[in-house]
Length: 115
Image (cartoon, rainbow, N blue to C red):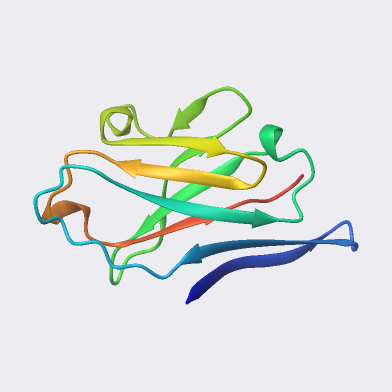
């Protein structure tokens, strides 16, 4: 089951699609967890900026970070110990959440846009 979060046209031509598996993660005995975002149609994926957002009920989505070509940029300095992100292969971006607890509940989305 795939959750398609973002699909739009760039320059009226190329369609970009980001897909995330609809997963529910329960902590159990784990202290960290990861989720993948699969991109289709992004040229030069390694140089693309992929953004990660978190949304909790009754609030607007909040950006956590974005991953550029060589570094992760956090929207708040405290996020750097909580979250990390990396790219795998030619089209997968991964978000990792560390020290997971009940405060981390929410829906996490990846996003991409081109200027």
